[in-house]
Length: 219
Image 1: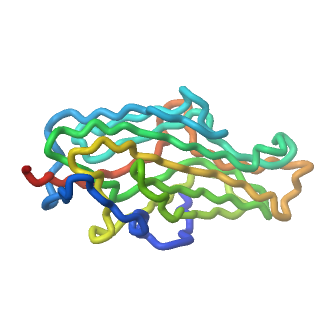
Image 2: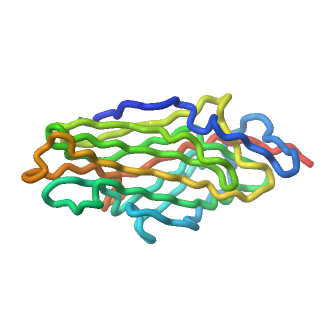
């Protein structure tokens, strides 16, 4: 059974950021995804949950979304865990190659993983994403409580009026910050191990980010 995590915070993930374009060119009306192939390069990887080479990105064939797959992203507490294992984080810098004349925003993020939490333990998944040169957005938080053994999923959705688009004609990295934390609480850490994971060895578990596209005004 898949457990849907509870939300702690507003759903407008990028509403707190203000976008200023260098040439005063604001995005135009909503548009279908561009027909040209979109590519994304991972240009920066930092954090205890994603050493270089442990995170990969793939764009959907229709250019409406992209997925991030982690291979070593797990936080844990208990008898098999180190003292520092209770918190893991990952900071990714992505270079999204957008066809000329288009710009994009992230309208939804879907997070998935697996959790094994003993009675009394709990876990939290946090995330934020923003364009290079802009202020970090308020983090969205999702929580789980033990006893739990199984898959979990959570989503952050941004309303149309709150979408923040990459500046037209400028190349800005998309920065994605995520964090996993496990709290032992009243669980028996001497005899049990509790963990929450957002990784996958076979690519079946990933994080999905949905694009919203717009056509830039002609200059």
